Image 1 (cartoon, rainbow, N blue to C red):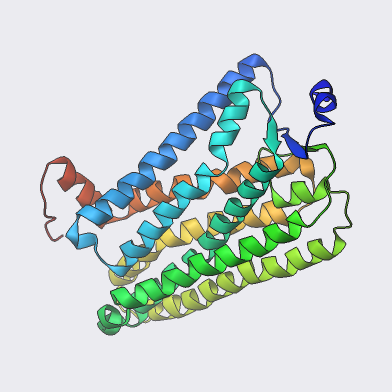
Image 2: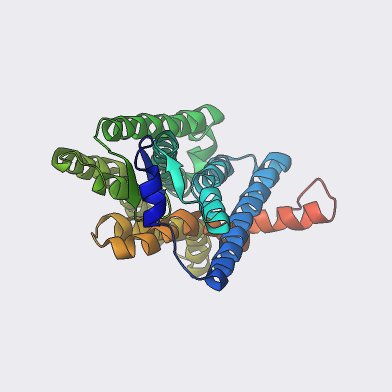
Amino acid sequence: MNEQLANRSNDNIGFHILAFPTSKKGQFILLTVFLMVYLIILIGNILILSLVCLVPQLHTSMYFFLSNLSVLDNFYVSTTLPKLIYITNTGDHAVSYNDCMAQLYFFLFFADTESFLLATMAVDRYVAICLPLHYPLIMSKQVCVLLAFPAWFMAAVNALMLTCFVHGLTFTGWKEVDNFFCDLKAVLTVSSSDTYFLRTFILVDGMFIGAVPMLLILTTYVGIISTIMKIKSSGGRKKTFSSCTSHIIIVVVYYGSALCLYMQYSLEQDKLFAIMFVTLVPMLNPIVYSLRNKDITRAIQRTVKGSKTIPEP
């Protein structure tokens, strides 16, 4: 590894992604696992997206946001896993400066969008449960687009801003990045510039990207739980709450893994939490919504049988 870096020392600026150094047997195991996880995520989210597009009964605001999440998750995981699979398979850890900046931008873009989309999905659940009679009117197609577009737009602008800040830092030669992709924290570590101001800004920015959507989610669920508790029937309470459980699971996993990744400073643990952050939510999204959602389950059953309609439960 050191010889490779020495040979590249006179080349342009670049990065050497350490990834997961292991034996040849371990390399094969990791390659198999990464490839299987990537395929599961792609196929699962494509299945969800296809069902929502093909089945008229799923043309509702809830599944509109779920479709956005499925598209996002496939882009999100494709930002990091294919390169990791390539590194594991070939042993070529080199990443050019421009490729690293591109990967950093798209990772930040999709990760931030996920946070905003989860908040919009919480708003959708709030309206559905707390204002059921007005739900079709309030959550019209136009409103859904107006809620989804800012999530993508704000994330794109924020990711561009952070990437530009990192681009303004000084990097010399080829640097070792102790992660399996160009993670923001790992890239800052190898810069020869003073990154104190940028690290402080990133902390404040992270509060906006993470804490504000999370606060909105918590606020909506306070209203949701309050409404559910007013339902006299225990069966009614259970049925109403079950419509939120899939979203709650995704929220807990996403923000839990994000906090583990960005609220600790051990580079040794970064790769473990990073792989969880990158793969868990995209993989759980189709699984959770398929297993816990009767509409999706019926859509799968009827689609397999070749039917174009879904009977009412």
